[in-house]
Image (cartoon, rainbow over all chains, first blue to last red; front, side, top):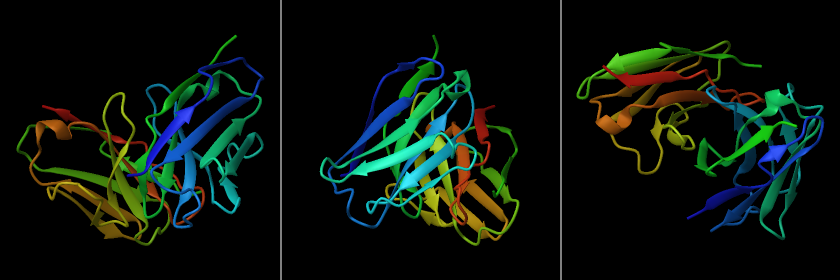
Length: 117
Length: 107
């Protein structure tokens, strides 16, 4: 079955760029049936949808983060990535990647990113 | 952006009871609404997609209904493992927004 795994630094300094990668296993990111999304959850709070990428490279970003977000895909590695620039403490959260079709039916386990000097 | 409002914020019930959770959208999302369950320290799990379709492996005690702006998640008879936080999410318009969550706690 399809599995997703996030990876990347757990600590990022303020004003720097947060970079995470989601590796897809057990299926192809190029299948064309799904969007590949990033979601985050600040400590003790709810879920915030960050954006998605399609295997073709088309993207959509949450307008609240659009100026700072870049999502890219590497179909040869079956991975997609998130970059969030100019981070502040408000970007501290658990970051999830997920496969989205009719709903988000496959999620990574999540990775905690703390923004602190 | 479509705003999803979930109610109640907290629901206190006992095992065996029926749970009814509500999600209201600020504008019509047709039937493009999903429900998720999240337990502490875990990723959310998809329960219901497109308002009323159970995801793979989800027990029959979970059901979803509604269309347009008003949606309901019903758990017919609560099991101990059902106590968690529940989120709704719409995929009618970008960005795909989530509700703020309903915490289902043991009474």
